[in-house]
Image (cartoon, rainbow, N blue to C red):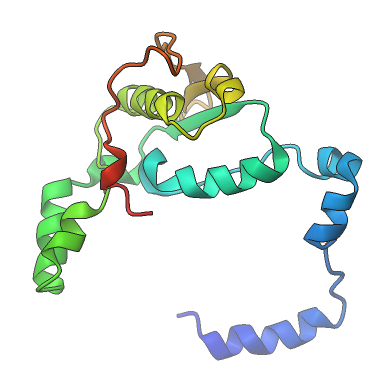
Length: 175
């Protein structure tokens, strides 16, 4: 079992040779460094639940101005084994009196990776705060963890002016 005190003690040894990364204001002052330091930024969460990531994405995009977005899901994702209703029921039993909070959570269990990626791409493209340039450069893929093969998800084109109805209502997201 991992112990916090052991972690803290190890940091004493590590800190003797630690070289701090460039601090944010210094990086911002040199826009060329931003391009060379940041090539890809990865946002991860359980089950590719995009609505939960939008606030984090918007913060980082405001600084780095992404050129493309790639939404990735992988086969045998643990969330494919999660049943939203069972999880909500278990949370309500463990946390009586908090049903409203639990019901507002976007848990996002799913069974089909391709459908999930398609829904998340459509949600992202239709989000009112996502820059138009990114709407046109957002794609989705599924990674087969057994073969290593990446398959692009076929997603009908959509723009902010004409988008499919997203599966997730943004009011369900806990921001």
